[in-house]
Image 1 (cartoon, one colour):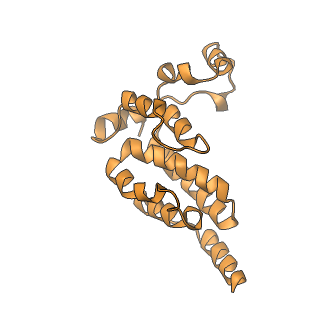
Image 2 (tube, helix red, strand yellow):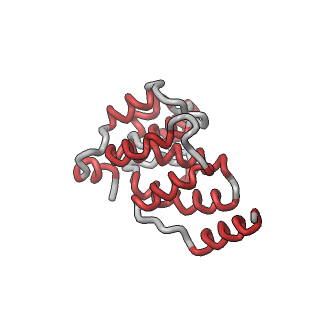
Image 3 (cartoon, rainbow, N blue to C red):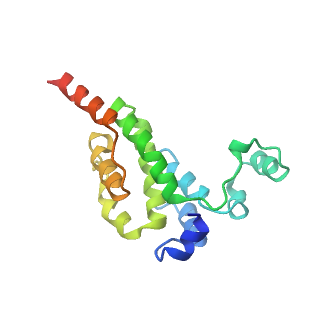
Length: 166
């Protein structure tokens, strides 16, 4: 499902203007700039290019960007969320906590754009001092919401780490 399809089928999907307004606002702390980048990536290239590096815009417009670096039009937010969840669970269970916290900020921005009700539900987790265990509870809540179940390898790794502490 493409972003344009989501715009027409999801009644609470934010508009490009709403996404840009949030990108431009300074109403939240974004230590990694992850939320701002996540918001920018949701916009069509023509709206986003004002905020991109000039060299990227030039290379994009003259067709010299490598395929893997090209701007993704019709950004599929739900796919981005479900594609990121496995790597976040693996990172959490291996102790790569900074990667997990940055990834959770991406998820927060994407969830805001497609599911305001769920975003409101998880917002208390982002209050200062509210994220415990490097976001494990929050990551599990988001995973459950989007139907992702951590793999047996993730669970086994976590159990091994917990047994080491005893």
